[in-house]
Image (cartoon, rainbow, N blue to C red; front, side):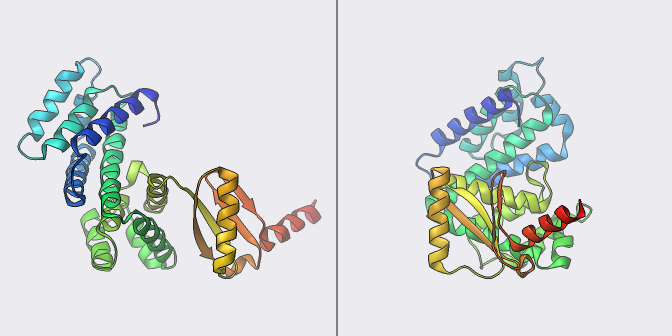
Length: 273
C-alpha cells in the first residue's frame, strides 16, 4: 500500500469504519474485525476478484456494488460499508487492495482492544510471544513454514495462547501467520507490535542487554528516548548474554549500538586493516 493513491483509499475506509462503529462495544468491534479479515482471506485466495475490484476501467461505484452484492446479508453493515468504501477508491495494483484490507482488519482489532482497555497488554503479549518463538527453534520453524497449512499453525497457536492472552493478541498472531502485508511470520509480528504501540501514540524501542535492567534503569532509558523522539516510548527488552555488556537500542531505522561485542568487532576490523 505504498502509493499515495492506495493510501487515500485506505484512509477513506478508516473514516467510514470510524463513522460506522463509533458507539460499538469491544465485542462488536472484534466481530467487525473478523469480518474484514475474512474478506482479506477471500482476496488472498482469489486474485481474479482482486483484479476486478481494482480495475481502473470500472467506475468506483460499480466496483463497490460488485463487492456489496457478494457480501450483503453475510457481514455486518459496518463491515460492508467500510469495505465498499475501500474498493470504490483507486489502487495502483491489485495487491495493494489486499494490503489495505488486512490493515483495516488490524485497525478494527486494535480498536476493539482500545475499547476494552487492553491495548498495553496486547502490545506486551505480542512482543513476549515473539520472544518465546525466537527462543524455540522447532516452534519458530513450524510457525514460519509457508508450506504448512495455515489452519494447522493457527490451531497450534490457539492451543498455546487461548485463555492466556487477550483475545486481540490471539487474533493478531493469527494475522501474522497469514503473512501480514506479505511479510514473514516474525516480521509480521514485529510490525503488529509497532502498530499496537502507535495506536497508543508510542514509539517502540528494541533494547538488547547482557543482563536484565532494573526498574530505575528502564525508566531512565525510556525517559531519555522519549525526550529524543518527542513522544512516549515502549521499551521491548531482550536479554542476550552474548553481547557481553553495554546496551543496543533500535528505534525504527535508528540503531544505537553500545555493546561490548560491537566494540570488540570494530577493534578486530581495525586491526585487520
